[in-house]
Length: 561
Image (cartoon, rainbow, N blue to C red):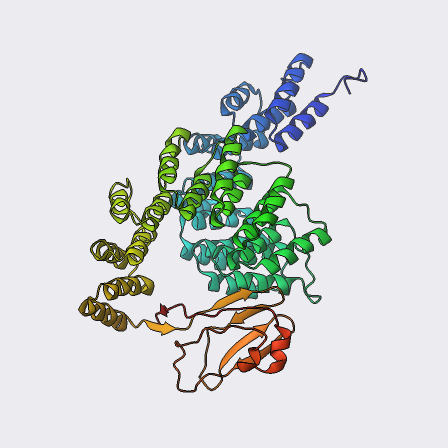
């Protein structure tokens, strides 16, 4: 407009300011503010309100307050802009001061103040305001619902949800996310099934709930249900982000390839977030070259993508490449974060580079980072694998925070590897205290005693396991070959029904006959070769020819429900 020699009106200036506010563009807004001042529009109530909204949204409450104080007249929009700004910056005291001074509050004023209290987890004051509201809209109920969930009070959230005059899509999604946050996936699914008309956002919430709570198979099943012709909901970037995470948990490379192909067919934009998720998936599945290819093709490499790639290299035993990539990242001016060091330390651990790993651990302070409990756990694993049991124990003793069961578990496993009874007992007792129903810890300590010939102690541990009701169950293996995926189901109804193996192509089931008197926990190592007809029907051998799958007992225990 100015290039054409036209003078903008106050309406045009206020519209431009609101556009900057929506984009949270402080620089652009400041330039327009200067133009408004030059044109003499700063005394216009519409321009002032737009300026107030701009600076409130970008968090510059000092400038926003000055503009607010200079306004000759204020409408409810002006008051609400100032109120919202203080709420977003966490200044509840000033927000309440503004709220109390508003001459005529509308529902937006009440909702903003309730959200302010909810943000600082003062749900008592939020509930009090909610009860005092002259009228409520859907946003009022959802503000309270989100507040209770963020506060961790899922019971109050559910009571409020059930009391809502009408649940919106946002309400259902918020409640499903709340159950996901507290790990109650079954309640989330019950809620999901109650929704009469489900849209993409609802499906995304439930799929994310499954993926975030390590129920990857159910996430994939729901995704499959969603794209069936009778439902016909097209997934978006958020859907695929959760599904890639699920495939990553399963180590399901075949599904990963299919998911990537599906995204390309649907025209899903491969943003950096999705590329990083795929890098993580392929790395965890052992397809490190494919992960590297995606990493190199990514347009923008940030700390997240570097960290995922470093972790993937470390997990796959390519410590040298992981270290080189870390140096490249630092040289590019990208500061590492805690996740980066998790991957780097894992690389040193897998490679058995003790001294280098210890130097790396200490160097975290050079980047202003404080090692978390998980980083200590990786270091304990590194030292323990190298047989430095005493050093690993001393490292735990020096921790500034209390170690969790994973740290003690790493030490216990190291003691099992190197038959250290003395420290193994200490680690075991800590594990039992922190996770009394985790059967694997008892089994590890029993094996340490057995290796040392301490059979009386072995018997004591076995008796404790029996008293707790732990039962030995067969393992479950999912082994992918070049042709098919073979699944060893962990459910043997009885010995006469045998052990089922299912093949993806074709989808059929075959039986490997076992001795009827053989306990389910005692399984042979089965090698599926050209001579598979010794174990299964001859036609099965033809289907899975050249595929090798080893099924081994995992020596695992579980507590009956």
